[in-house]
Image (tube, rainbow, N blue to C red; front, side):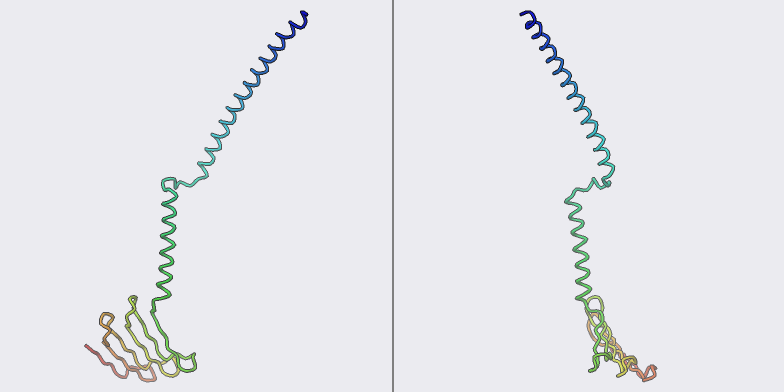
Length: 151
């Protein structure tokens, strides 16, 4: 019976020592995990750009505004007419050109000969009023034939 009583305290001591060693290992692993997380957070901070001052919503708003400005510019370029060319019945040779300013007002009308290259007449307009201010007529060789000024 003595042997049974002696083994019980020894078993308890081994169990206590085992628990103590297991606890020490767990504490060591926790410290190791914390050290690894700190080093990873330092690496993550180095990889991030220095735009931390702006929030995501501000960045999204800036991106949205840039995109809207580009779209608006493209629409304006497509819808605003700066030059309109009219063609002869063949569809290839230009017969006249109308030139407009940025606001869409006609500023010049150029009438071409049947060859599409020689200028017959240039009519200039006041962009504010739309009234004709000058007419210039040309000879076939390109020299000025007649100039009319309007008020």
